[in-house]
Image (cartoon, rainbow, N blue to C red; front, side, top):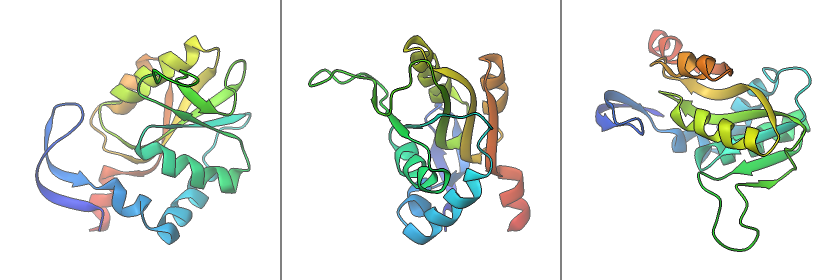
Length: 162
């Protein structure tokens, strides 16, 4: 199962007693495809490009794109220092309505940072979509940055299902 209990340090620096091991559902092709199919219906109308964030968002965005039939961009945490030296690879984002896709949102920090970078590249970003919203302030942080978060699953819903 993807929900683990114990003591875990999150990307935000916070300590949590539960952890959603996203790689458990990202590595299972059947489960990932089922999640992606359900996520595809949550894509806002008018979306032109799906942008997956490194690293967990890459598997998710690729699976969602199969169902949504939309082009995909792969967004690095930093532009690479070699080759094309790009932050975003794949589909062009400049001048297009882009939906940021992440696996798990806690504080929303990386989504905010990546969205700011995509906007500098000319992308129009006002929504993000995730598999799990841990409901620890991420949605509010994104709202402050002008981003509406949509989530397939929430921490509360997962806890209620246990």
